[in-house]
Length: 274
Image 1 (cartoon, rainbow, N blue to C red):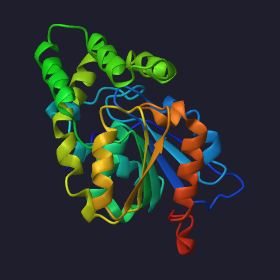
Image 2: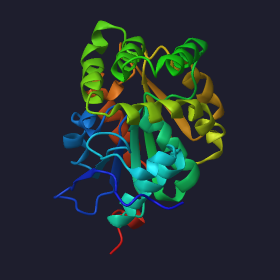
Image 3: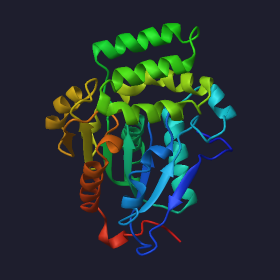
Image 4: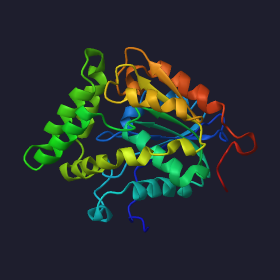
């Protein structure tokens, strides 16, 4: 599969004291961008080299003609690995939130040799009946209503409580920077979310799932999945919703860093070629 000429926007935060520290790649959720990692970067770069990548179609990436053919999880993961190749990063840890976690599942299936371990926040394994009805309704009316109306509706349903307000508001504000056609292309891809995670237990990349106890649309499926997946474990953060890296940032950072440090390869700590 050929890649678009335009590469994904990304930022690098190097560990000046430990230049050979392992790399961590951060992937945001739908409608967002890498600003959502502002509570993680300063903590993670004490232990790792850090890279944030803005997903295709998300601010500040430009629209790409290649995407006119239709969005593709394959192409998205290829573009992420292309950024790693550009910076000679052979292998890295990955951290995602929401859609970013779904993409990490796809990376595991296609590029597990490029990954040490993964932390998956707000993971969406599948949609419950209520979510499916909402998505179907969204598909039916998307041509007739402003995309931000749909996005705000879903944001309030996913993150309904008062303690979700800050993360909910941030996601809505960042989504305003996304073009309508780009949002609808990603919205179309929600139909493939369940397929992406099928048989993920067959892959041996160590995975830590971190979800809020109030992530009411998705955490039930994670709890059902974990017992059958020997490479995975789940940490449930109390009084926390879908965007757990913002709502419970201290706990998220502590658990994620502790987990990833268990899987640094001593013989290749830099994971970066010449």
